[in-house]
Image (cartoon, rainbow, N blue to C red):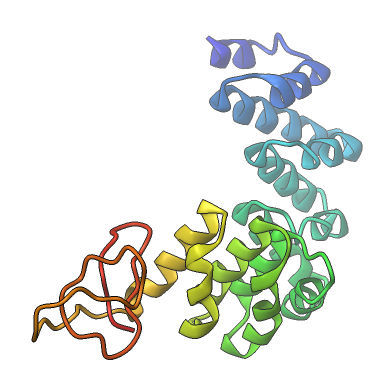
Length: 228
């Protein structure tokens, strides 16, 4: 039905913007945003594109940012480099490169700030290398659990996880942090070799029977013992 409404041109630009911002159906939001942004590009109403680029809906922000790029407003798109949404960051990075902006340096500076945005941490993991890991390690003890979780994920993506640094976070009060740590540690674990009977005492709650030659970890996802 909404496609028919669009095809017939029954909605004006303000109506399309309202649908893109408030409709409960994600499909309608995307189609309304696409129609609104196309018209805004054709009529050079860049303020509409900027408004939708600030939407709380990531799928709307992506469409609006693409419209800004098509309209030649790359600098407006660059303002979204630290967005929470991966697709939004990708569009913003393309715009930044066209302007000659070093996106890796941007993310390095942003991640090293006192209160880094989650998108900046994720952006560094997407564009950086293991050499950038020292910027993320201090964030493992950040007061905000979302930052700690993103830092663990970033280290995993950079292939720079150091076991003894993230291991204590298995007891973090935030389930999101524990999940990220368990995911980061999983590729680094090997099954325990059972050569004698006896319950492992390295980790409270571990049900493993066998020798412990390193650290026995009870992961959040499997509650299984592993050697690191």
